[in-house]
Image (cartoon, rainbow, N blue to C red; front, top):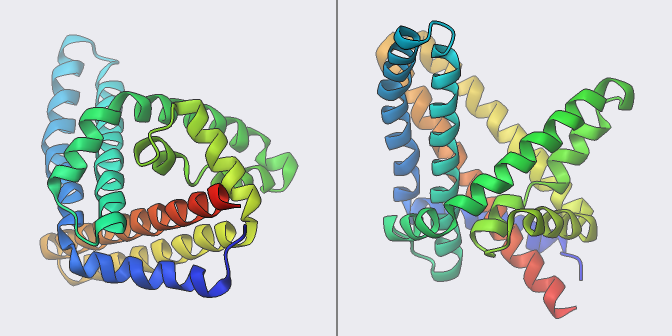
Length: 230
């Protein structure tokens, strides 16, 4: 069963309501940002001291691990918010502690698929990248909220997107627009003051991440519920 335009609009509207009601969803991203600002240079310096060529690679691994942890944590909180209208750090911790390995596996598969999509993009006029964004958008929600295995999560994401192509394309497009708007606001803040602008820009980015996670989680829960009832 497909989703109506009204339901689609309600997802974005209610996601904003949930974010306003549960601003704590932004906190994990802020904490990860602080940890990353300290840990990445430190690990890079230590690794480069031991192995001169390993510094950048070590920093990349740390950044990737932190991003994955944030993604699982925030997705768990988003699922809790949609199910109970309220969420807390306990929802994120439950998701991270129970679904970290499946989420890491799904992320690894997504990197491989994304690389293939990028390689084929020039000859497909970018269609492979669009397909990647659309068909894989629900993967983390499927793995963390739906508790699917990594490959099963990718398959469920693709099948859900295929059965609800227009709403899913809308989700991806509107999130991209919101992210672009947030980037523009962040760049304006950077011009106001170096430190204050950087802090405001970082906060805007984390609000966008939290809101996007809520939108994707909400659509996933609605669409998979609709599929199970059809």
